[in-house]
Image 1 (cartoon, rainbow, N blue to C red):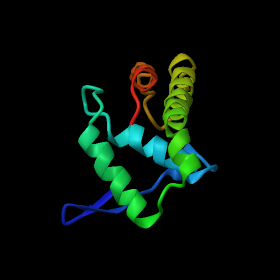
Image 2 (image 1 turned 30 degrees about the horizontal axis):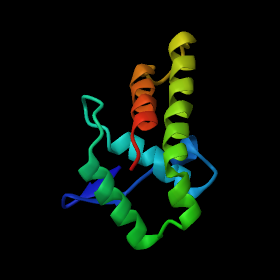
Image 3 (image 1 turned 90 degrees about the vertical axis):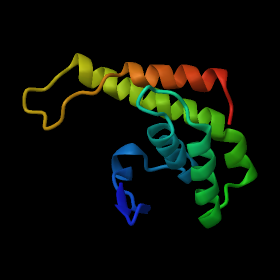
Length: 115
């Protein structure tokens, strides 16, 4: 993420997240940016992000209806890849494996709540 004068000016790294529907990319970003350091969902952040996104590219009715499943799917995808990396560490890895339980908790949150 790039900030300029306190405003978001650019985002990178979607290549490793998803090459599918734009709404799924949005779900991945919501999960990454709308849970705080204590893994609590920020309704304010999600409302602002969704409003900003839709000011450029409005979600259609099918995307809006699918968002709860997309948020759960995004959490599950990162839970599984983090779990794999956690259980299969590589000596030559350039990054430190991240705790997969964060995504487990996000998945549980999305199963119990809707936007």
